[in-house]
Image (tube, rainbow over the protein chains, first blue to last red):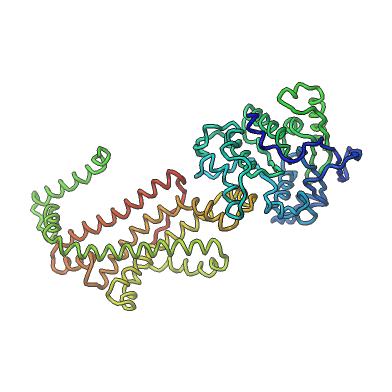
Length: 292
Length: 255
């Protein structure tokens, strides 16, 4: 798997700088400004969403601020219904915020979507059932080719190999397990080599053992490609294991309550779970989640 | 071949009982001709019958194609345009209440005794199930897949060709089978009401002259025509179902 990843490596791999501005009212930790500025990849400024429902308007997100730097892996954890998936949908320009600004790599979310700046991995793998695994991976490239010419940075076949599905190219989604389909979904999100990866509870629907393997895969991919990742999950342990920073959300209205810097060494693997620091960090996040 | 035999033996048995019954009970041929008489008649009058069959096939196929295209295109228009949907909806409801075969005499007045009125009747009857299932199939596309397509900035056209249309195929194809059979009904009704050609005309002719052999011969031929069209679409449907799955499309049939 390792040599196949080499081509994925993008942009500079300078040490990441944790220069973070988090200005919600409950911010429990502020980060000292770093001497060297990391470029922000995803910025949400004072973003709110209000849904109209039968029983009146519901404020899903309120005055939310968020900055994710380039090459940073950031998770948002929170109880169900806190609006964490709504954050991702706003970043992905699948939902327009009621107010506030969204910037992705200096563009609006809509422009970023049209520039193919991000790939999205959804909770359910979302396969086109009449396409094979390989055709599903190639789908974004086909769609992009229909709009403008853009050569595939890595061939879809190699991507499938990379996510451990060599030999499964010709199978249809119904012939694949849930974990395999999620691997295809990851390969698809990477197919056009976007600088940003948006993942909406991607491993919530697979069993524990499969999830472990997918964690290893994602860590491997991140190590080599250093994509900026926004990862939505309700699994605290997963968030701590994968991320550079964990943001804790609360509901009604959805806001970011706290952030935890995960200063565990990289590259990480399953063994990180034996690190006492890992356990302490998980406990801190859990405490923040359950304190209300 | 074995499968074919297991499917066909009840029919052969039925024909055998029919043949025997006409002889044993001495049923007169003008009431119920024995199968062998019908077959003999088809062979003897082959030339005349094939001409009339050909006329009916043209009417049925033209009516079917018009219904399939019209139903599909209007279905697409309804799904993609709120205005078209609003404009068409009341007419669709009313058109379902009107028994469309009752329009046949009117179409004869308007379009004469040629092929046109039969084609129009066939198309009118056959069109509705295609329309309904096209709308159902296009609307049944998985919203998550649409969202995925939006996330990769796919255009409306790309979403139609890559998602909505393939998704609607398992809905549309069964409706085409129904439409084919309804086209046969429409063409026959049209010929009953006013014509001097076609299998429906031969049935009326056999009826008037108490030539029951002829009536049965025409009946057998029109059944064969229906079976061939139905079977052909069924083959396409099987291939589609293999790749695109089977839709849980409801079939709405109103004659």
